[in-house]
Amino acid sequence: MSKKPKLETVAKEAGVSVATASQVMRGAGRISELTRKKVRLAAKKLNYVPDGRAAAMRSGENREIGLSIHKIANPFNAEIISGASDLFESEGYLLSVLDARDDAERQRNQLEAFIRSTRGGVLWVPAEDTPKSTFELLTTHQLPSVTFLRRSEFADLDHIGIENAKATAEATHHLAELGHRRIAFLGGTARVAVRSERIEGYTSALAQLGLGAPIVWDCEDGRVAGMQAMDEIRRQHPDVTALVCNGDMVAIGACLALQRRGEMPGREVSVVGFDDIQDAELAVPPLTTMAVSPYMLGRKLARVMLERIREPDMPITVSHVPARMVLRETTKPPMQR
Image 1 (tube, rainbow, N blue to C red):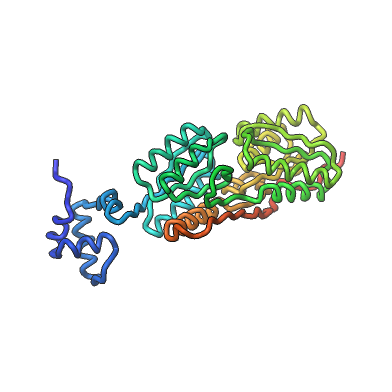
Image 2: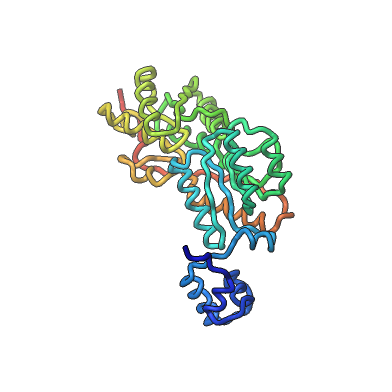
């Protein structure tokens, strides 16, 4: 087995001093492009990779960021990860991602692992029922932290959220303006602020419009659960002609259930999603949704983290991203009966 290459070996191969090779690998110093190219080619030839842990110990900086999120397979989360990863990479940082599955203890273990491996910062969606001690863990170790979607009540951290109530109220008003009078809310089971805010926007709009009692239907935010829930709603509430959904995945599932019944989304039942994942536009028929552009949201998260790392003493920032209605083919006036 060949020995792991050292910086000294790279310097010798390139015909430069160790100090020059070190500056090239760190992207520092006033060094000619020709010399930089020679060092990089030597490093590639020898399969040399700088020891990031040693560099972090010397400089006090670690260019790896941890992300703890729930259900990586969810397309919304996948697009957030893609956006954050792309921006970090363009700035010379690496993003490592772990799936907490909305489990507070599992997430605590992940955050401890990020601290042990000296991550430069952590992006995370606090799990349901996250205890105060988890936030104290991060503040004790002074790890730059940005929460998103769910804001902490225990710690003053940078946060990016969504204008959830305003978005679902707009979706409900849109359906009412089309003529719908029995509108249900579909999706989600977690007792978290994001869903509560979305339900609040829906129910407040119903009250303002005088459209009667709300129908809030719990189910997991996925295609299969959305299909099953839609069948039950049609059976138990045949007068419902429109849905405001907690996410695009459950909305797409509801649309699939309608089609299996021989009904058409936007004809028998209008459906509004939330997020505007790529599948929303590609669905048949294309899904009307409240768009928050998850890829761009991921980039915004990365920018906030980099600002916190570069200016650790700057004031805490809290921002809420507005949702924009994207009209497609799943919302139309109700059928005349």
